[in-house]
Length: 43
Length: 182
Image (tube, rainbow over all chains, first blue to last red; front, side):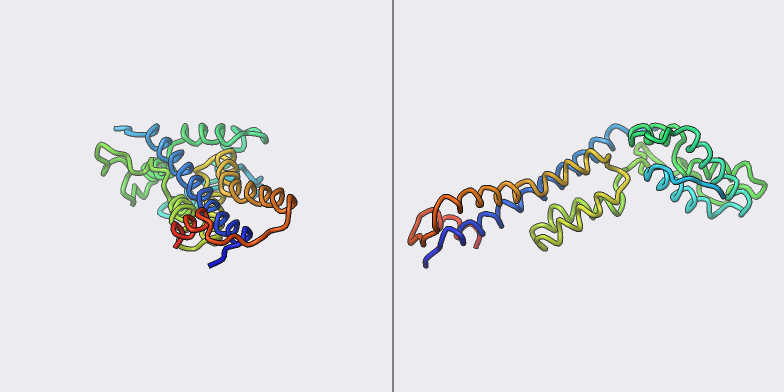
């Protein structure tokens, strides 16, 4: 099976580009989690 | 009603207040909403940051608490379950996690794997629609989402300009990548 650099690049982009949204989601979840921790408990 | 458009956080707060105030008599509900809107308009400068708005809203208390207090003053009495009476050691109403927040995080994480491109775009849309994150956090998440793609595309552009592509046969790196992705 011959894989050219373009195909290789597309595979790399598909794999690495998934990291961005996942990191962004974890970042947003962390921010909300921290905010929740700051506002509790109140009783 | 001559109301001006407030900060989205404040508008969202008033929307939740309006929903919670459905249990009040019509006149009481309208008075309450007008009073709160006037209070927010007076207390927030035009260039108020999200943090300023959040501080003011925290001072006011949750919409449910305000409606409960208004209901107590109303002759009809409180027809709703008052907040905090059913709470234990943990205040559930203080949770910032709503539908938009859950969908945003799920779209960006699980959605990225299950529905590539569509999942993260929807996730970002929900994140921007949510009042729980500041504009700065939303921008940061947006940049994080697209940064790898932009960096790779730019890198590819540079690499492509350096010479013609030629097939690589039995290259160990390509075998490794295909093995990981398959």
